[in-house]
Image (cartoon, rainbow, N blue to C red):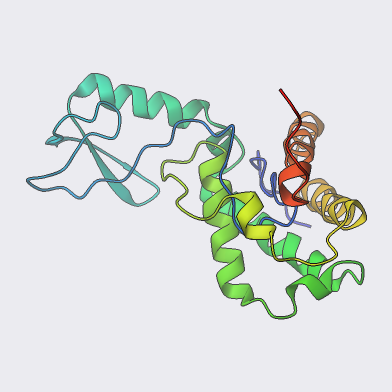
Length: 199
C-alpha cells in the first residue's frame, strides 16, 4: 500500500457523510475572483489584487499582507495541510468507498447513489471540515441522512470500522487516526437522527 504522508483526518467525519456541516471546522476562507468586487476572505474588506497567494491551484486575494499571513498560517496549521491536503483526501475517500461498497453490512445504502457525485461531495466536505480553504455549502448531517430507513448504530459502527482500516492502510499516525475516530464518533447522533441531548 502506498504511503500518503500526514493524511488529514481524511474520512474523518465519513460515517455515512452523504453531506454535512462541519460543526467544529476551522474557519475556512472563500476563494475570491480577482476583480473589482473581490472581497478579502479574512477581513471582509475589499481585496487588493496585488496581495495574493496561490494555494492548491487557486488564487486568493486579500485586503493586506496581514490578512494574507493569517490565511497562510491557518493553512499551515490546519489538519487539512498537515495530513496531506487535497491529494490525501482524494486518495482516502477513494479507498474508503471501495471498502464501503464491498461491505455487505452497509453497501445497500449506496445502491441508488451516484457514487461519482458522492465521492466529490465527500471530498469537498472533508476538505472544509479539516481546515481547507473552501467552505462547505452542502446539507447538514441530519438532513442528509433523514431519509435513510433502518440506519442503526451497527451501520454507523461498520462505517467507522472501514474508516479506521482506510486510515491505517494509508499509514496515518495513530494519534491522528484517534483524532479522526473521535470526530467521527461525535457525528453519531446527527447521522442517526437521534434527538439532541437536553442542555
